[in-house]
Amino acid sequence: MPGPKSTEAVKQITYLSGALKAPRIAETAARMADQARDAGWSFEDYLAAVLDREVSARNASGAEQRIKAAGFPARKTLEDFDWDAQPTARQQIAALASGGFLLEAQNVVLLGPPGTGKTHLATALGIVAARHGHRVLFATATNWVTRLTDAHRQGNLPRELARLRRYGLIIVDEVGYLPFEQDAANLFFQLVSSRYEHASLILTSNLPFSGWGGVFGDQAVAAAMIDRIVHHADVLTLKGASYRLRGRGIDTLPSIKTQDPAD
Image (cartoon, rainbow, N blue to C red):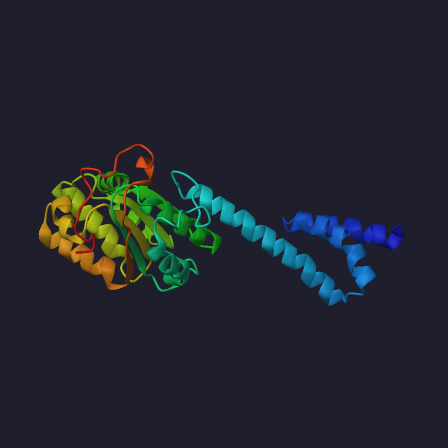
């Protein structure tokens, strides 16, 4: 049973942890006190252990908040990806999962037919980024254009682009599913340009780069955009039939290209 001094110390720890807005410290300190005494820890060892638990808890809590704020359509991880369907991508994705590409403001482009796991992998890498301490935003290409168009109409586009540059990772899903008008294409180009060599992008597309001119309505704009995206990028080409069609007796979809998507 703790003596008067110990009781007073516990009260003081509780008060101080509350003042620091770190209430977990009081709980951890109490839980680890007997362990520290029994193991003969030094004061420094005990303090380091308590603070380590607090930092770990804060990191986990912060990561969860960043994941929720990212706007992912569903929670997908690398652990639950079907690597048997995309074995050639495994090594490259594992290297990206270290998070090094984010520190170097590099991009990732996932190309391939519908249903081959592009969105899953983009989301999973986004979750990895959040766990590494980076702020992340996810949206389809169409939704990004809508967001930029609204900012432009309100006269806030430069401010919006600057704000988005503070995110370590922006994910643009489904490039190519719908064509853009010229103004929308120019706005999207500004998003890409604003992040060039500043912060990372992950893009997914069902089209090869050669088909992007039709999406953006201008070959010159598409070429300039692709040039900036791939200058510092890992480009992964996923192949195969859609996992959504497995067991349904359908082998191909009309939109699936026979050429390599990266051509």
